[in-house]
Image 1 (spheres, one colour):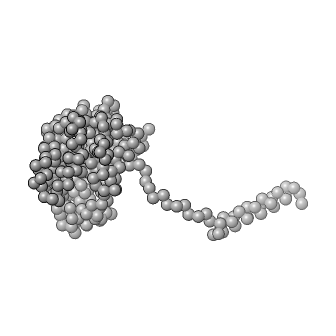
Image 2 (cartoon, rainbow, N blue to C red):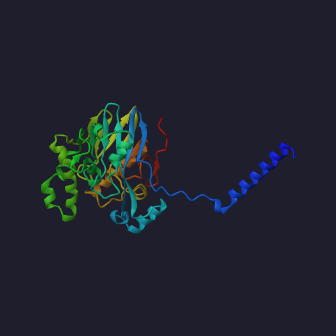
Image 3 (cartoon, rainbow, N blue to C red):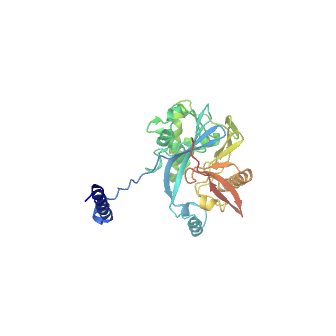
Length: 323
């Protein structure tokens, strides 16, 4: 047999053998183990010259069919339209704004105050390329535990160089020992969490309250939206004509409260005022077509509203990688 014919025959035999091995079930590789973890929880976008980084503190399951002031059956039906159910996996988000001269954090997550599935904001801030020591100012929407608990890491201030700011009405209410003493037993924890989180900054001279609508930094303005708490505030972020409104707890359950803004939640201190502020904020966001973000919208919690009948439709921000 000629050498060329021999090589051809050997090659054909090898290919036939390889094909047989590939098709043989006994030759299959073992399945790769499931990783069961996700990427760090941060998402970055630009707003004019400002860099906005959404930070996940984690999620918590909430029995929203019992918490919302609505018929539980109708709540379940509304959730089902969004392929959701109660208890609802609820995001807790914070937002970091780099203005170019200041690093400003809006809310801090729950820290250790709300269970093991939360308290990840500081770790995600580090994953996003920043250190807690770099944060210059922290603006609190309100003093519920899942917004202020991240101020502390055990006995240490998580953000040792930051000035913390919040509406005076919230400070007067939640940091008052007299108010805590007369509160029902099942409400005292709200006061204890606020005091444990804020008082170290107060003692260090790093807490500075504001009253009403206030420009806190060029391009960052606090706007009163009282109702969820006595001093609940939202924050308007603006750069080069682009606007982001950060709503805090103006709303909680997207599947229900966008379709029906009148529905309130049991966490609201003043349900009538909370509903009125939500309706006003929704209408403004739809009319002016600016970007919105909220603490309990599914992470990263950024998007746009448009009017839809008697309610609204929420469109999440389209994903775009940063260079």
